[in-house]
Image (cartoon, rainbow, N blue to C red; front, side, top):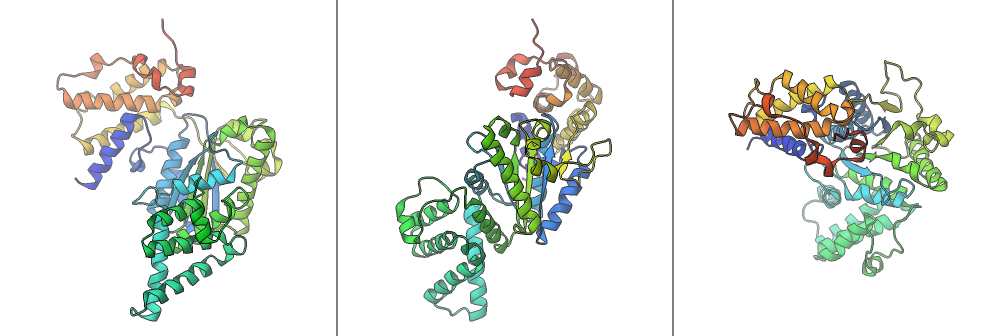
Length: 425
């Protein structure tokens, strides 16, 4: 199956499920050219050794999740490793260990998800290759192993000055792989990734104590970025999504969470986190509400925008997204028709006409209080269903038969969608 057709089917399958496609997002993106260009320029700076960030601000339905997914897709095409973390009660912003753990669990390259093992293996293989190229291919295994362990220590010397456990555990991982002790090797990767319940055997063999906690998670993140770059990748791009949940925490936890953001911003500005890019998302209330970022003036001063008139400047710390409107949704629908044509067959453009698309948007929007920004996910799910029926049945005419009935979707509505749904009696 041709790659473009496979990608097209993946996009349509995701829209059927009401989710953001894993790839090919540029094919259904609308109105984000300027924002994507700014992010691409930032990534260019980061891959040259800088560190940068961007806050993405918008109401529900403005496309924050889509832009984040698109930004990470751009990063992977440029050779970055990416990770997408969603802030939730189980992963609050004020607990750095939990953030670090999720970053490690969700590492993704252009060809692989959950890529921690591949990244570390590529790094170690690169060290061995360099040593062999210098000393010649006749190097004995024991000599190569000793030299590689020295290189691991040298490569992470800056991190080891603050905490030696990362280098010690990576040496243990390397030895365990060489001796075929894959259980120990897996435990070493698990400890580095801050997974819970790692056995005592690893700690004894690695000569380490305790676990990664909030006080050293930031140091380990810096070490991870060093390994990623040395393994041949451009850097690490991390998305921290749905930060607005932080507003529901107790005051001391909120302040700690916002101080974490100050710490990250200052580390990037000092050059302490080279080749690391952060994306943060939140609703306007997170930025301007009494329990939001405004409540910590040092953070608010660092990321506040100069102006938010009609000529928005996405080069400022925040990208402020506008609500989705009818014109944008129509354009997305037309792009989806083109994707569907590559996935299956050319749809009947008379049955799926521009006039029908507008009528369909009106029908669905009416049931959601006129809120076009709320309906894109629901509309696209319904729209793909109609495209399917038009392909499967020659006598199916959506102009005559389509009506939007909310009964079949009530159980799957998100709280924001449910809040504005118009109930009919």
